[in-house]
Amino acid sequence: MTVKLRSGSGGWSTVTTVLGGIGAASDPINALLGGIQRKLFAPRTVDLTLGHGPFDEKFEIVATDPDVARSLVGPMLADEHAAGRAPTWTIQGDTLYTLQGTSPIVPEEIPARLSALLRVADLLGR
Image 1 (tube, rainbow, N blue to C red):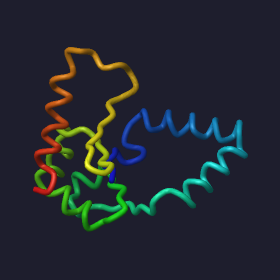
Image 2 (image 1 turned 30 degrees about the vertical axis):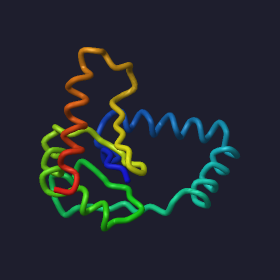
Image 3 (image 1 turned 90 degrees about the vertical axis):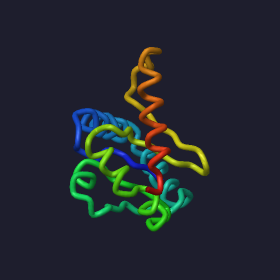
Image 4 (image 1 turned 60 degrees about the vertical axis):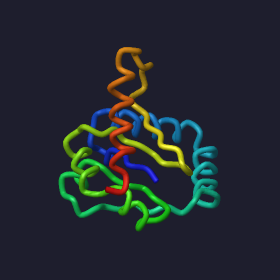
């Protein structure tokens, strides 16, 4: 499952959408085959909302099991996201991941970023 920024909620999403479109236009066969491969072999996921307005406006959840996703992202974690205090994240198996931008991490930023991800881990299921 993944909690990510809703498409169109930032300037970076516009850039990646445009670049993705350029890549698909320059190599339409591979773009088509990649889309078919994802549909055939990727796990079936659903996009869902929590019914928490401030969270749902900014974020979306993609999950294979909506009930599990809703049980993991409770009101406290949704509030942290809505307030901008929690990073976007993905769970694969028993591992929690986050990505923060495209530039290398500055060593001085590691404690704050790790603390934010640990806060997510602490709030899962609450």
